[in-house]
Length: 591
Image 1 (spheres, helix red, strand yellow):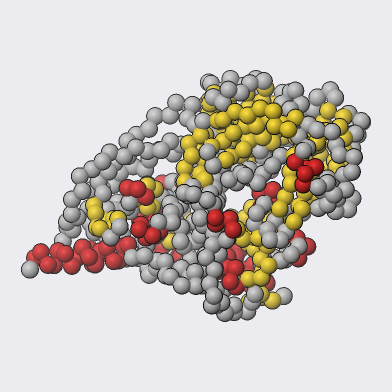
Image 2 (cartoon, rainbow, N blue to C red):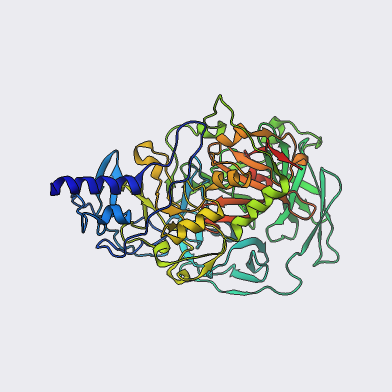
């Protein structure tokens, strides 16, 4: 009799904690039920692994989980003293413990490859310092990583807490990194000792230095750059090379005695998806265009915000995150084409030639096996669901509510002794806390809703789930049906497609399922707040407006796993960063 009660209790615990949330048909993923309160004690509490290097696990003997009492599992929803996990239908108890890691300052760059329903994370904010040395920001730990011309990691430096890089400004003796607040900057001397520096300090931004270059537009195919610091400097007249729209023009690199350099972006198509071409333009001191280099972006895992720089020889360097890791490639300039109004693809590809390339040590995580077919779209359904009507104003209101949920992080939302803070699907460990959530936030009020893989909470259901002990967020993702898609029922939050679905006032759908309730837009000019940028089977962002100024940039709201976000946040992207996304509009939207 006792044995039968024990087996029933364990079975009930597995159903309550690990029941799959994915429902086949129409691409709908329903919210899981409210979780039961978490246990107050466990013999398995252990520290979270150190970020920046993969944690090693010690294999453990697997034994059946024995609850503290027969009534405890069903009453509490989680068994006391054991981390119950189901792998391919078998209930197991995991007792592995992460080994501590020792940082040397020479760890490889981190990079997370594209995965279905998740945007990859790649190094960004790349700049050249001096001969033999350049730097980029690591996407996972936020360190500034120094790289030699031989591809060796020369050192790492931590940025100040909460410092999010917005712009990179290159001066003759230093590089200035400006944060998104516009009030702080980090200066990196060009003669920095990369092997000894371990951290960098932020200082206030000097007055009148935020925008030294003034950009004005003269029609859809021309932008003019003027340097407000130098009264005698000639304006740079940047014009489109293709038949498309000149969207962006920004000066890069410290000026030499003979040349100035401008990165330009051109939108060449919007159907079936946004297509962008990136060029580096070389001007002489008189403002005459003397060279052009085309930088292909089609094969990149994700296009970084700042991935092009110039060295002291006037050679273009591009940081390229590829499926196999990060590479740095050098390009030389070609003569400008005589006919610059509508250059063909053949002409474009001939502009600039790759002359050198070296690999950077990269810790590549994630990715999928085989072809990246999800770029072409995911599963579509013959039966189209209804699209209830909603005003454009209400869509934006719904979306912005995710920025001000204003919830309180309690101890049970921060950690659960029965659930390890580790994303290792091969070990059946599926929950990882957003890294920005530290123990200092316990008891504090937090504004935005955190990211949760597979999540579809509204602000109301999220707060209700948090109040009964749900774990806050989950940035561990996978697409294995054998592992129930790595969904953790006892967590709360929202993912990218869940966020757009809820903003549109419909039940949660995947990024491919959203196409069944949307129509395609054929022009950037057609975009209105409440529309979306969708990369089917991959990621989706809600458009809320064009960024102010003469250049084309898109302001969006999104739910993202990226380090600077890990939840719902507002971001502005250049067209190159949106390359490959489809422009869509919800069928039921009005106004």
